[in-house]
Length: 290
Image 1 (cartoon, rainbow, N blue to C red):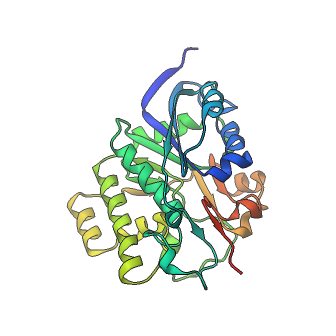
Image 2 (tube, one colour):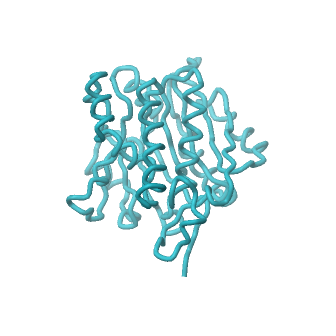
Image 3 (spheres, helix red, strand yellow):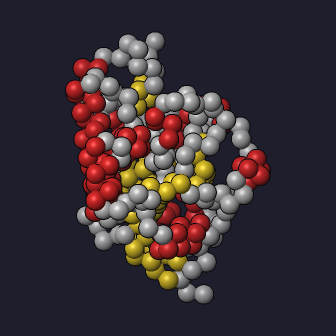
């Protein structure tokens, strides 16, 4: 059966030099595409790196996957201060931090990649990280169907793991950044405003802790965000979907696929920390402070 090329849907994989060198990126790609990712479609794949990398062999590997039509690489090269992911914040010198806070590495990789996508002809993007995996085949069909049949800006998962989150903290209601993005003007608006919010928090309120997905959650509930949603009738544009399951805390590393499917039987995409090495998510510079 000849595959149909879907040029409206793209997979964006944010990756780091360390994930490339360790082989974690290659393992992730095999999980994504080695088994039938679709019975119908070929799609484009974009891998966005935090540094310039020789991708010659990687390109050859990716283009051989049956469901991949084209492969493109983004290289988001940042100065060291903007390429970090800080876990221990207590004694870190904030004067050396990037303008997007302790998570500048992951934040910059997200925002610069999304800026490029907004200028492209794609309509929908499924954003992945190297600690994602699919536990169902034909996942491309699942997410293309959802994209075409639903109105949304971002569709993804709340946290669904074993950790006990603070009951009243606002950040606990955010949609994880591994998600479907509708690359329209409304998505671009909220992405841009969330970046501005992080910069404001860093410079004006000395809050260096915001990640991009939490900022996207917060910006919806500002006065401007609420007015924008009202004016454009976007009340249901941020969707929680059962096909994506977010298990992103250390407490979740031993949850098995069987347990996931028993609890979430229609789950397709899992975002999970598998071991301690991967716990510092999208770590572009693993800062371990004494």
